[in-house]
Image (cartoon, rainbow, N blue to C red; front, top):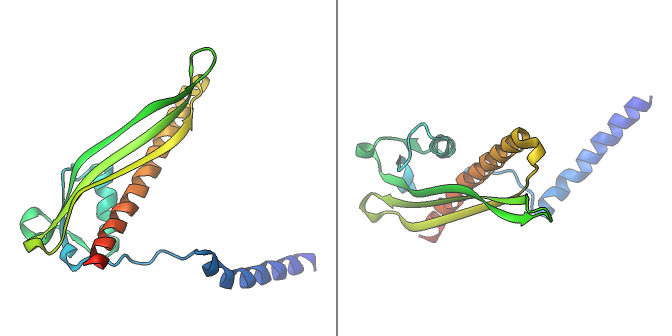
Length: 170
């Protein structure tokens, strides 16, 4: 009987919370409203097997964009610069690094066929603070890679948001 009551309470909680979620701003991400000029896009400036290129291609395809070569493209998404690195944020009393800031910078531009779409000199910078422990170098290196992967996923979302904003402003 107790398990049944717990299940009922859980179901009741879900039913009560569902209408409240949109009020706090939560919403499932729908398809982006991308410009029609992006229907057939070529991604330039990256190796096609690069993780950022693969993630961008996947996100664009999920939004109905075909990734094509330059000759068949209605738009070119060009990555003009990409950097990632780290900076020291704090050191301990012994002079050893305690905290780092990981960063990723991506510059890109988009040019549509016949000036149907044009975004120039777009720059995205993401940072993550990272506690460094020299006694766990391998674990911290793996954690840093996870943070870089997370920043890359966010960069792809931000690029899509910029493309969507270009569509809504035109």
